[in-house]
Structure formats: C-alpha cells, structure tokens
Image 1 (cartoon, rainbow, N blue to C red):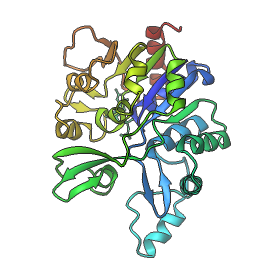
Image 2 (tube, rainbow, N blue to C red; image 1 turned 90 degrees about the vertical axis):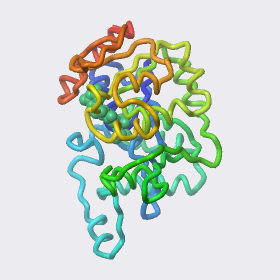
Image 3 (cartoon, protein in one colour; image 1 turned 60 degrees about the vertical axis):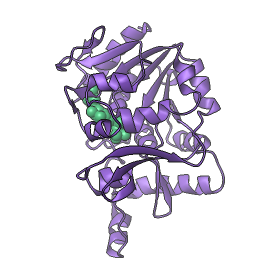
Image 4 (cartoon, helix red, strand yellow; image 1 turned 30 degrees about the vertical axis):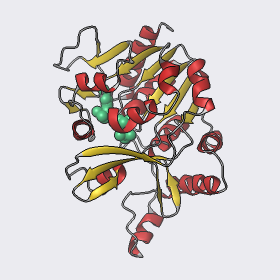
Length: 300
Ligand code: GDP
C-alpha cells in the first residue's frame, strides 16, 4: 500500500495517474481539511471533495474542483436573493455539502462521513481526512485575519498577506484510521501540493510526522524555479517565512523526504534530488509520473 498526502489540485493530478497503474485498494490518501468552510449552512471540504470526485470518475478536470457538467441553479438563485456565496457551488456538489453538513451536525466524525460519501460514489480507494478536529488556515491581510478561501477565492489572491495562521480550539490529532494506513504502507508520497496550505497542515496533525518517519517518503515539488505550477503557493511560502521554490519546499518539509523529485525544467539545483517531467498536463503525463514514482517506491 502507498499512502499519499494530498491537497486539491497537484496531488489529485498525480492520483489520476496512480489509479490507472495501481490496484485501487492499495491507494490510501490523507487529505488536507484546513481549507474546510461552512457556507449557506453546508459543509465544504474542497480537497476531500476533489479527491472523492476524482476517484468516483465525476471530477471536473478542467478546473480540478466540482462535478463535471454540474448545473448552478441554486447558486444563481441564491445570488438573486442577495446572498453572496463567494464560492461557486454546483447543484450536485451542494448536495454533497448538505449531506456532509447534516451528518456532521448529527455528531458524526468527518472520517465516517467521508467513508459513507465515498461508498455511495463507489470509490474503492481509501480516502481519509487528516483529522476529525476542526482546523482552519487563515491569512493575515490588511483586511485582518481572514479564511484562506476568502483570500484565494473571494479576493482572487490579489491582496498582500503577512502571515499564515492555523487556528483551532484543540490541536488537531491524526485519526486512528490515518495512523493505521501509514503503518500499513511501505511508502508515503507527498504529492505536488501547496506546501503551506495543503501539506503542512497534514504534517502538523499530532502523530503523523512520527508515523511517517520510518517509511520511505517521496516528495514531489510543486515549484519550477520560484513559481508554482499554479495557485498562490509563492505568496504563502513568503508569508510563512520560506523561500518560494524547491529549496523552500524541502525546508518546509523539515528533512522528512528521503527522495525529493524536482521537475526537469526547475533551474534550482538540489543535490541528490531526482528529476522527472512533473507537469501533468494530461492523463498520459500523470500516468508517466505515477510509473516513475512506483519504480522509485520499488513496487513495480
Ligand atoms: P489546492 O488544495 O487546490 O491548493 O491544491 P494542492 O495544494 O493539491 O495543489 C496546488 C499546488 O499544485 C500548486 O502549488 C501547484 O504548483 C501544484 N501543481 C499543480 N499542478 C501541478 C503539476 O502538474 N505538476 C506539479 N509539479 N505541480 C503542480
């Protein structure tokens, strides 16, 4: 079994390839939940939704969020009624958020809710939230401390950020299920996700770092030079005190990776790193990178 640490864009692109070259039951994914947010009374878990929709075969892979060919009737009508849902939510996607919100209000753990939703969508891979504890990534801006989604989706990342703050009532704990899949895995892959908003929150869950320490850990850089392939990772790295780029990514991972993969185009030289084409612009390219990683993991 291989366990992947995932956000909602870069690592899912890798998982799209992995699901074609691995047995579905051999794939476990620990997913970031620090971007979760309640909107219109329902529970959005953007990264969990993307991973679940990917494995269910219904993800909109043009955007890497939402369900392919979804309609937006409710979202548009709510806007007409004067409610600013700053995240665009499709009708089927909203049904998932309603179901999740209902189960969570009834007191269920996010881990169990995720299992039920994945079962209903016929997902065979093991998709796990990193924690059942509520934790939120916020950024400090001129507007004060705001949710990461407010910064990235509402403000389109166009405002300056000074600091990244992770807030919670109780320190987030890795779940039993998360620790069990790590234990059952030989290899842990840190996919090319945002080091600050996707991977660090997972590594910060109590129990995870010590659990992965004696595993073969392979990490893929989300940067080429000082720019991420997409998204706000550079600004977030700077705000969190890391140099944007592969070196900063490796520092952010505190020496945990045994193997560090950089893109063949990355001009930054890191001794001992492995080079592959990591730009997953098609399913074929995702499969090719997945095969290289499996080869490194020694399972193929
Ligand atoms: P989020 O939750 O939507 O922010 O998604 P992730 O954290 O999973 O992924 C965002 C990161 O993925 C960004 O920092 C991108 O640079 C990186 N990324 C996206 N596509 C690719 C790709 O094809 N190759 C690599 N190496 N990184 C990618």
